[in-house]
Length: 138
Image 1 (cartoon, rainbow, N blue to C red):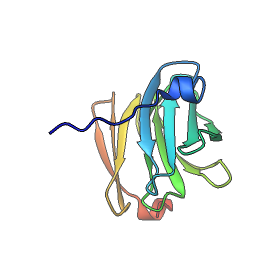
Image 2 (image 1 turned 90 degrees about the vertical axis):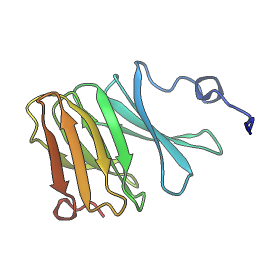
Image 3 (image 1 turned 30 degrees about the horizontal axis):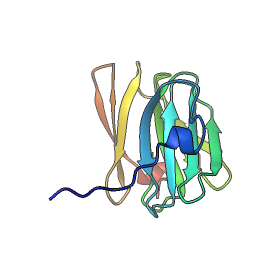
Image 4 (image 1 turned 45 degrees about the vertical axis):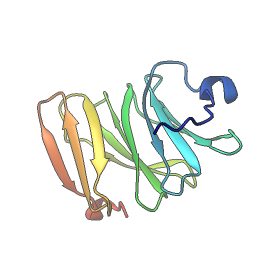
């Protein structure tokens, strides 16, 4: 059985999302927001119901390759070709932490379901498993 859902093209519904290629998207845990990351070095949050542009997160110095929300939805993590992983506090749109343990582009990140562990993979041929609790990631 195939369900047919009404589709909305975000770029035409909400206007241009980014000025360069979009690398990743993620739903907030409460389902109210979509975050997108791009080659334009930004992360943007969008309110799903209204299409309103929420917070724009600026701080990476190269393409933002991967994003993930924390389980409580208060923070977002981002990975970049600038060799860093950043932790963002979403209510104020502030960068609260930068991890610099990779020597090349960080290609992907993921949090465990409870948010206690972070995994990152990089062009430096490494996979790193982080204890996320001491990093202040709920």
